[in-house]
Image (cartoon, rainbow, N blue to C red; front, side):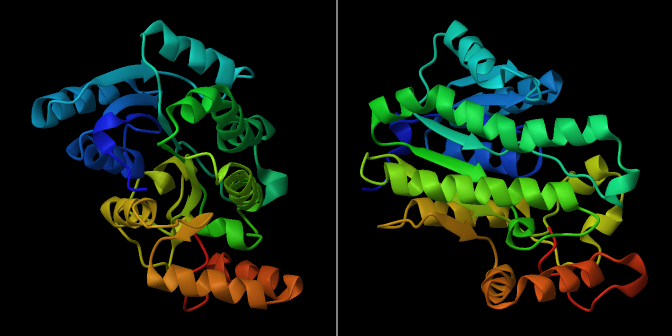
Length: 274
């Protein structure tokens, strides 16, 4: 059944920039009301004002840190406090770290796991009763091409995204006959602030970057498909790389990624990174 966006109130995390901002813009253009969640209140307010003016849609701003221990319950309470009932959810927020695992700050790694893994799980669980009650919405979790192979120098990030991919595909199977459309979206290297947060361009060096608008087009085309599958990869090169990763042995896959992510031995193609 095609999504009637004019009936949707979509909660979108990580909405202040990049893929989240592009998705908020396109959903508003299609008539959806929005609940925008991110840490940077000023950016959220500016985006909300723009979307209200341009598309005459209702936009609720909820500045929120997604690294808290009770993120699902606390975010649900904050949204309920605005009197808003969410019918669809996009867990887009996330960030990565780059470097040798032994050199990483353990507190930053803990926050990375909280935002990339715990937050999507808790938020999905907290809002799922409302999504199921609506019966015609969607739940999208943003994974990554990094989910498809272990990534040395991004060991924790690739592991978190593998979790998101498998978690979401399992939810697809559990919920596929409920009227709720569920899938994981896996972008590759994209022109966002990802590298700024990571702190180095090495995280996606050598990869051909797609735009946030490219990623959103892929997501919404999959959402509008007659029978969406449990996951979708953005970009033909990335889809080919994801398919290849399933054919490789675990040893070969991680050895290839070690070469791709090694600044001193950069492979000609970094298609699996991102």
